[in-house]
Image (cartoon, rainbow, N blue to C red; front, side, top):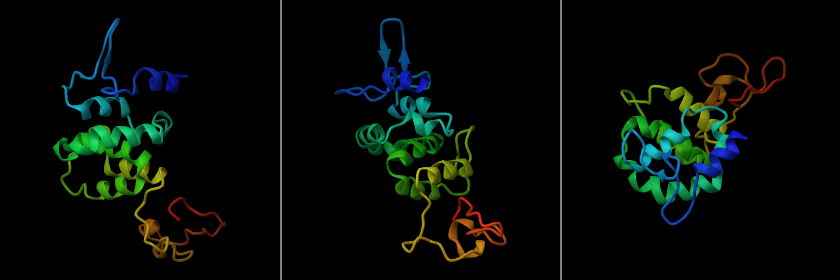
Length: 167
């Protein structure tokens, strides 16, 4: 019920709308208490990044919002907002989101509620992961699979016959 309400009242779409920042008794505004940048409005409505985020955001909504409002200003965004909004991008284009997240190197300023690990986890849930063109799978050994390489032993499948999520 909350997801339906959020989509109806906050995720609007018209000539000028896209995401509402503040709802009052008789008015709505795109601004937030962070300021008037469009990425603040989207960012405060996307966080926190949790499994519920993928239920809140539809692919078609994100595609429109990203193309019209967010991609044109990606270079202007503060790093902490990029770390939130790259997760939003993953709903529409997980591979591009993965590429952008991997560019968030040492010293990148993630939002206080995020880490690179959480960002990559969320993007991977949307189908991103930077696999090689051959799929990245190379056998049961963890080291033979790009996304499992940090693990030891058998991963794809394990000794008990279970494929780990990194396979």
